[in-house]
Length: 511
Image (cartoon, rainbow, N blue to C red):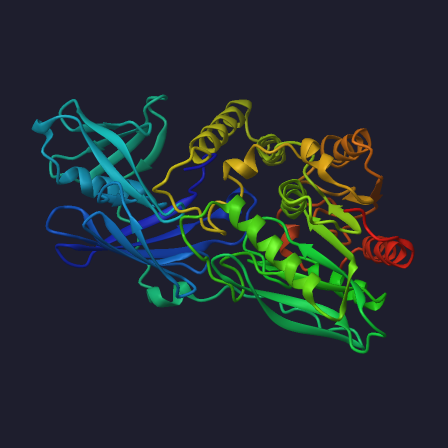
């Protein structure tokens, strides 16, 4: 239950003595999200009571299947790539929306007389094994260190579950829900994709591959069909999430393509790359932290662009949107030899991302009109989650699309300090309808920090532009993100004219 409404509807079916099939529907629309999402999982328990096989059926999940054995897991991802992972312990259950159903099955098999013990769970999102404590309480109940007390029947069935810090607050109850017998394979179908628009006349979009440190990246190179000679070029880095080289993301489309087309129309070529796990690009080595992979991939894309014979290497520009802006700043700090002729930061963070996420959470609580008590709980839960996820853990996989913002190198970096590495003119753009970053606390703060470092920084606020720089005449909301709004023409003109102007007049970049 969430805000008094059923948020996750779930059911379990015993397929055999060792195999359970779980179905659940997340009713996100009841809290202002998209339409209901159905998912399912099949879990097989081995003779030792541990999870042996796990298959997830979901249109949006990264993991498809996990086979456990001898403290190792063979993971098959949705894109078909396989990874082998060393585990700290064999998992007793899999953490999912149906945690209560799985936990009740696990507790029913335990001997209460043995007292407290530790259980290990596998997270399909973080792809990691963690542990928590369970202990018998009273005649039938079990208490857990994750804040849940489960009331079991004499036969071992789940009766109810309450939050231990608020006795009587119902968060789960046994029932006989209707089991949705939808073919589970259909739940893994791809989401409806938003097709990219065709290129303008005279513009070519070229699919390319780029070798990064541990993976082959897929990119999109956009340029004029008949360039007069070596042309200036721009590396465009998208923000966080599973975003493809042309700006496709689950359920929405960014305006990456339109930005690249606008640059090509003024004689500036551009390159964008898939995020790991998006488009045609896999994840690479699974144990590499997100911050390191993003920097390595951005550097590889920059070198690829600079090495092309049809590119004027003295007039290379960089543009980064949201998290992509932070990656560019980190890249310039890490490698001073990279000397762009100009830098565009689009809706950039101007403070550590932890602060921005906390502010976004508070704003969403206000939008949903939750009570002050509920808002405090949401705030505390996010703070606890960030603290936990930001801890380095050698056993944890931090793949590109799974924990996009919780790598410590990303979460704690202050862009205002990183901007001191910029040695070229810089343009900062921010939309006045942006609900993810703040004009005053992020974009303008970064502009002021740049000026204090003697960086030639220009700030421009775009009227009727949201965080994605789409034309947004109304109030921007998460629901409107799902609508394919057109790009803001003022934004496209600002990017294209600024880069074209510098390309025509800028001297050789300082090195």
